Image 1 (cartoon, rainbow, N blue to C red):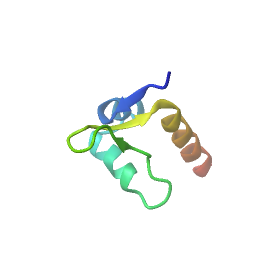
Image 2 (cartoon, rainbow, N blue to C red):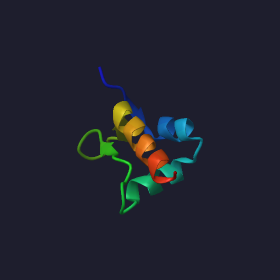
Image 3 (tube, rainbow, N blue to C red):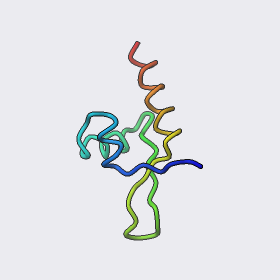
Image 4 (tube, one colour):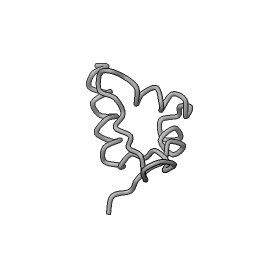
Length: 63
């Protein structure tokens, strides 16, 4: 089963602020793939494997 992480959980894993997480999602190049859970007031989430893949791409990009 895939775990859907909240913005707060992502911020903790990245040792970043929640504002930074939203900024990563707004990037034009390789944005953090957040999605809204629910139609209107649902919180933003990211599946754990998608976060890990995004982190790996960022590591490779910065080598």
